[in-house]
Length: 143
Image (cartoon, rainbow, N blue to C red):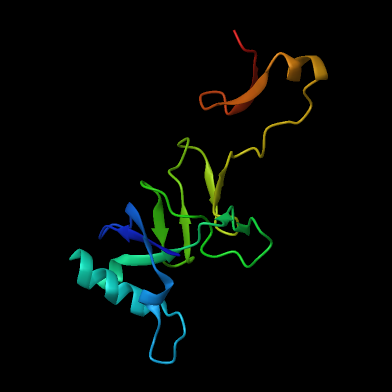
């Protein structure tokens, strides 16, 4: 099965559809994204150029089965299609966060959360959460 994201004129993912691989074969019998786009336009009344193929097996620009990553992330509703970087990425979680176009993921302006929780804290389900006002990672115990 092939997956295609239906995007808006502003590059927002509106939905994701599956397509039989046989519906995207060119005259040489090779899978071709443009053939799939034409098929989807014909059967869904949405312009071919606004159907973008996505990979169910790609997250953070890594293929989960060890294959070749494709377009950053599997597209989800509300994701953005970035044509310049050839990636899908999720909504920005905080105003200060920065998009890493290599991994198609958002990162805090000071880096990843610390990984220094004690075993006791982990057992108690303590975690780090982003504090947008203070621009810090704060330990948050479960109440």
